[in-house]
Image (cartoon, rainbow, N blue to C red; front, side, top):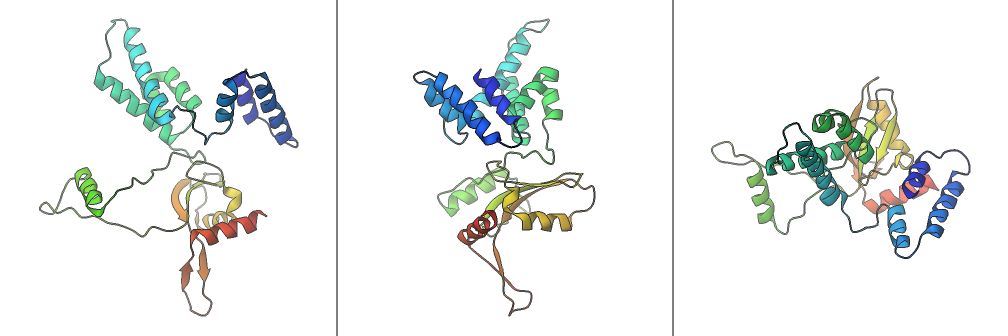
Length: 249
């Protein structure tokens, strides 16, 4: 009942949709007992921790379960090796990162196993993918150690590292479909297209017709100084936030 109700919420549209959603969620809460209330609320609020990590627990378990089940049900029953399990877990994680839709991931597994996940769960313009996030370091020495260890050396053992300025803005994933539709998503994959109409307009001006692409970007507020030709000043994030509030309200 809970699963069916939550899936039904995604299909609602039109006037009065918020009231309908509220009534259905209230119905679930009223029917809950004891600790069920806590888990329902944590399920309703996707950014609230429920004690289960999708990336760290659910996806690896799904990959392991698939390869173990496939080995046990084959014509010649064998045990799945540790390497096979790790490979399956990596394929499932990668598939979800490129297409964060558990239903699509499971459907692909049922249709054709890991091979189908590799072809079906790929990057599509219009479907936000999991962003690559920063990994903090405590010192410059630790940073260099990580980078040098991650890449092979060249130029007689010299490792060349490039760095860029950290912009004080909002991370954005900008999608443009071949049909010309432009969507802007946050690092949590929330649709924030309506917050940045000027970004949408700029992308529309620059894009070629029938060209689909995905941009990983940082949106930064810019002040154009009219008294200095061709000179702009980058503004801090708080001023970008103020501009967004002005647009929304």
